[in-house]
Image (tube, rainbow, N blue to C red):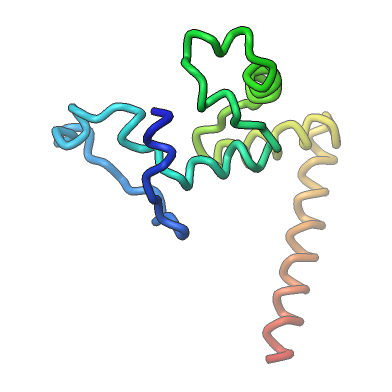
Amino acid sequence: MVSALTEEGQDNCPPREQVDLAAKKILDNKTVVDFVTTTSRRIFEGFNVNLDFLAKDQSAWENNESFQSAHQVLSKVAAVNDFAECGVSLIQDYNQILTKDEEQWQFLQQVVNSIGDTSLHELTTLT
């Protein structure tokens, strides 16, 4: 996988493709390595992770300071399957904090919807 980080990737990744799981034969022989390119380095760069350990033998990584630092940072990163899943979770958490009273919640939704409708109307009349 380390050598795959030297393979050129795309700057503008295409949107996620929908894969028909029944016809997934194309993915049967692929591994993680098939999806790693130089573009994958951006993940590490985004977390300011030092990649010096990649040049060393994998058996020596455990004792390498840059590996230990990278492991400490990246082990705290939670993976989210989809932005929508993250958004739903955020909204649910916010709703629980905001109010537990169903009547207040319904009123709040009406207020937010009316503000949104008003703002949308103002935007369309400006153009």
